[in-house]
Image (cartoon, rainbow, N blue to C red; front, side, top):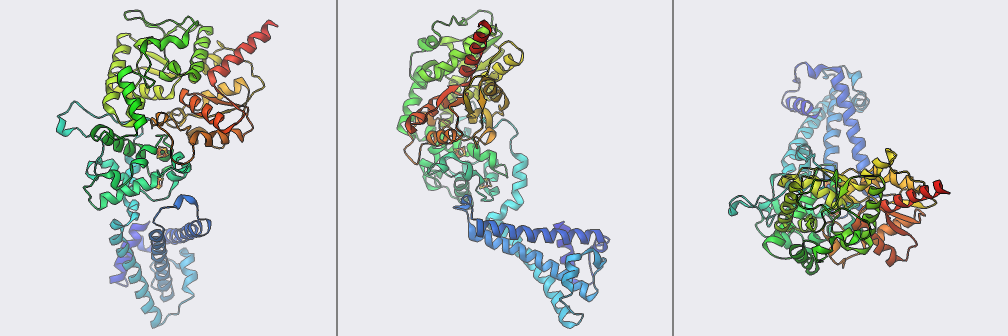
Length: 572
Ligand code: SF4
Ligand code: SF4
């Protein structure tokens, strides 16, 4: 609509009787221009109302003065257009039937037919054209550049699962390897486009668990700071000149910002690239995370425990450990490090194994041949260690001819399912909640709901990053009375463990896990169901620290309880 209208105004400015051939005399087009101009004015008023009266917190840190100027500018452009049309109608110069422009026609009654109106008509059209030209000249220097680039950015936003990270190609000549982003010059073209696309709307900031718990990180301010560096063509280090180290390490890679951003900005890629540079080039990271990296590197798990202890969680369950050269099972149960080594996370794996056995599923585990997927190292920025572990695991899985994998850990689920293909690992990867829900649907597991009031916490890497939403809810409903938290599904709130934050002290702001536990407690539930070993540990800590009376329990354990209940009912 805008483009031909601008063209007509430019012609009309230099030639009072000129217009675009044909289109300039069309009533329907004049009507659309009238309608759009009115809608723009209503929208500008709504935007001013939101900014000046409602004042939502998400605008904190945005360039509010500049946004006001731009809104006023847009209002000026549209108002001069309407007044120009109105003055032409008053003078009888309109090429289109006046009745098709109800707004301009109504305004035309403000003017007479004499010389003053002739001068005003010239004044309005020139004001309109100059406002447009000024706007176009100002655009490249303002945050409003998003008007031009946002659509392109949305077009190029990746449609792959959100949890996937792009690998670094270490095979190419060392001089060409991009070790994350040190300066603005290291940003990829998509990252540059991201910085120019930001509308400063603050939706990302509003959803960010780090920002919401008083940390230094705001995804909006991060993108704005990177944009300032790009604009200034700065060659100084992005950290700490654009953002502090704390900002980089506050992120839990939950993806809430990416989910909320209306213009397709991919914040996690920026943050991981900053981390990659700090870790791999500068060896700069929080001390406690360094201990985790050493353990992953030395012991192949972040707990630093001997690999020989990997099967201890299954003691007494008679679970088959797949040996090299043996025929693969129908399903490989990828246990993950947390269920193997953390006491609280073990329970979910034990319940899963019991249920698989009850349903007669042919499954096995890799035992000591399973190594950490590399997820915590990768999300911390240590791509070297991640790729070493990924290649090692892919080799083990491929040699064992594994085709289908079930895992209780959404981080393993995401890494093996979305990222191992880069190293030749292509498997059908299923989360245990999906697998168990299918067994229930097929009648191979028959639960009986009990009296628990259950609220289910969506793990970010399951719900937001991988769209697994319904299967966990089926299991919760099959086990008791399910009730939702306000933030659920793709709009879940992180437990605080992602992005390797599980291994970092939370020294700034309020604990994310406690914030989530309070939200769960407000539902009145007595059971906080989880589907992730990291969430189990974090939320259990949150329950203890807040003194909340709620049991944190994996959905597999809830289902196992419900199946046992059914068995007991049958026997009685
Ligand atoms: S990924 Fe999550 S924690 Fe990180 S910036 Fe985005 S919303 Fe905040
Ligand atoms: S949601 Fe996107 S456009 Fe809005 S402030 Fe955040 S990064 Fe910018």
